[in-house]
Length: 394
Image (cartoon, rainbow, N blue to C red; front, side, top):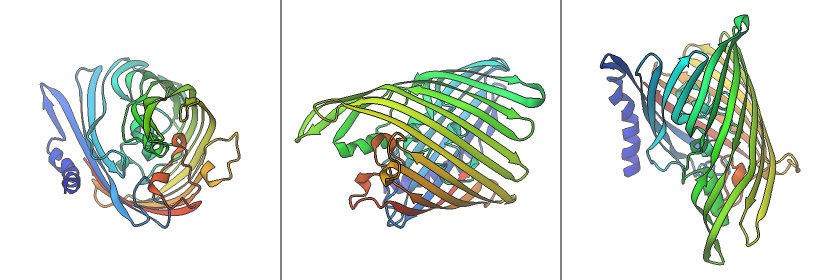
């Protein structure tokens, strides 16, 4: 009953806030926006995102509201509150998705502080804006749903700015440093439960940056870099006895390259990431060294055939560790997707898409929706998934 009431409340939030969409306080414009979405997933085999999708599941809900205002011509503040329930992720717990102040000294230099969205690739900082995207699930090789809470923002500070490049377009840059958010319902933590590990702390420092060129002819090119710590402390059960557990990263570096081209009703995106990680884990009495060289990429295309109808497709590829054989199902994930989106009204949309998976990585640091804990019968090397998602935004 509590879950049903919460879902109903999420559906009502946009309507309740619509009357307050844009108003003034002390001569300053206050903007309020909100959104909510509800999804359904069904798979032929393999439960996905910890949901019982092989039987069909509606436990794919999220929603939020944000408020922002321009305090002065150069100073802006804003915050977003967010809630989700995706299987074991979120569990209806409201969180502050982001909350920051931004001061722009010049067009070419500004600063932000607080819990700030992390700029990484084309879509990392817009993962929460499902209403903007054609696809019900962004390419999971880059933007996994089960890692969202740890990747969308950092608590710290940014520098940013725009530099005009004449006929070429505009260069935009961002540099940041801060702490990774902690989330007890993160996919990484859920995966470690199969090794009898429970975390009390899982976080660390993040530093990185992004540089992109937005051209005058419809193209965007860019590159992102991130260095982070994934350090954890907690307990591990050994022979039924709880013992202290910890892990730490020696190095965790990601380099990402991306491009986008838009021409009239057609858009194509592509991204490539290499992530190298050197970690030490204490799953046994002796430390265990984990070194991986992960690669991922995707190519996506969309075409708007009507102002209210759009179709899209993408191929997403993820390799757990390219230093080893990537042919086993646990070592890769290939995802071929076809999708359609219909704008029912200006505020209400619906998406339908099919996923055709090859592979099912289950290593805690490589999870992309598939978990042994949610598939006690074992994972099949290939599976298909239907996703239907509808949402509103104001």
